[in-house]
Length: 82
Image (tube, rainbow, N blue to C red; front, side):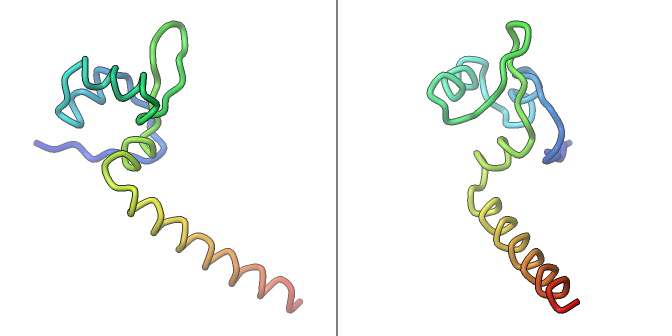
């Protein structure tokens, strides 16, 4: 059974290991090299879902940013017409 990675969810290293099917040493190496960004809270890492999605598919993030900017431009254009 595959679990969906939620963009705004916060994951522990153990959860990341399960979601991405990686070993603990691989997750730690990704964190240490800065490939996977995280915040350290009380000695434990917390990783945002959007960081996992970016790791898996950077193209997906680029697409979502492009869509967001397009929608924002339309909203600004409507507001400016008022």
